[in-house]
Image (cartoon, rainbow, N blue to C red; front, side):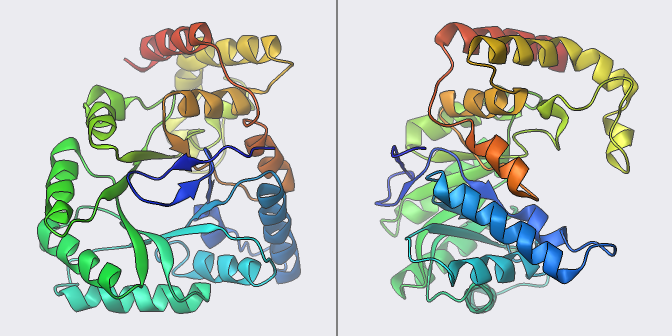
Length: 313
């Protein structure tokens, strides 16, 4: 579906303009779902995504306590195509030395079944160890060939600049910053992060690009999400954002009946970000990949910007 790849930051790594986020692969094992069914859904999701031309898969040691990485490793064993694998290191407060990063990385590599990962990311900018020290640790594992590029996640503009400058001392570019970014969360734009990353050639990777399913359009004031999501995405909230969901539908209809999901993901790509929606099954994967192969007009993007700003202020 797509043969167009983009450069990851200033690295030599080329990725598809959309990836697959594997957070859900960590918690996909449900009590009422047998292992065989889980494995089948994951393999089908992976295959559909790969066949659409997507080569970028993002996981983390924290996703299901390593379960997501293990599932990815199982899928990789069954293919011959080259893919770009990204995972993350969580700087827990008790991880106090550079060696902790190396040890965690080696465990991730073992779970995935690789000798190196393309992109290794700091999951959060947690204390007590400073950003510069962790970037020094990243430079060490790059030198050893265990990773090919360095990224961060959930870093503010100031923290991003500190990481960028720390890596620059080792002549290593900061490849990416993975942040929550969607039509319902424009904080990366309002904080100046998007502008900074463009200036420094750092790729923005957008997680929760569909705001936990809210931007798919399947929820309404009379059909709110179940479970913990019902607290935030309640009837009042859904009434508030209804104009945005209606606009997604209207724009989608004008583009050969594209769904709100496809429009919302395409909007992020038009913004220069790489969305990494999750998928639990083949149907969701097909929806995600349908955001490729076409593009919103500048007028469409401006219209979505305007209505998004109105409902999120």
